[in-house]
Figure 1: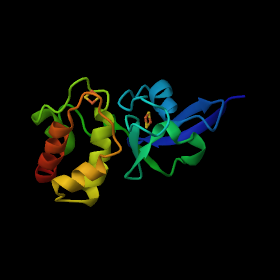
Figure 2: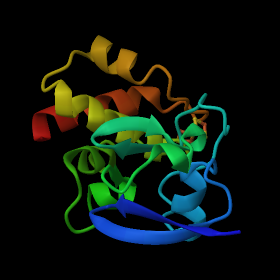
Figure 3: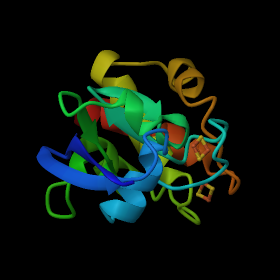
Length: 156
Ligand code: FES
Ligand code: FES
């Protein structure tokens, strides 16, 4: 039997109907709330493409069951980070550095970087690479991605 689940997503209180409280947060975001920023890549916490923020921390939504998320926690997706007319500094820097090829990994790269930069104002290139080491990009745009994050740290 479906039950109501309340969430706080991108600053809005929403209620969805769920059959399984262990359903991954990613499915609720993409399928119930139509937020397509977070992507399904591996489904196993291995690639990072599903990353969102929960209370400012980057989490892999593919392995985060809804049972672990309360409506007191703030879930933010790529859509809530910034808009086309008012992008987050990391989103702006990715555009300025043309850091995107196919784009599949970019949600994770941006969300991970934004959480990282919130705590590390002026990181070195090495620190940026370490922060993104577990985010995979099959297109090999890592060099541009690192440049974009460095640029964002000065734009922010
Ligand atoms: S889809 Fe979540 S880490 Fe790959
Ligand atoms: S831009 Fe294609 S996977 Fe990263």
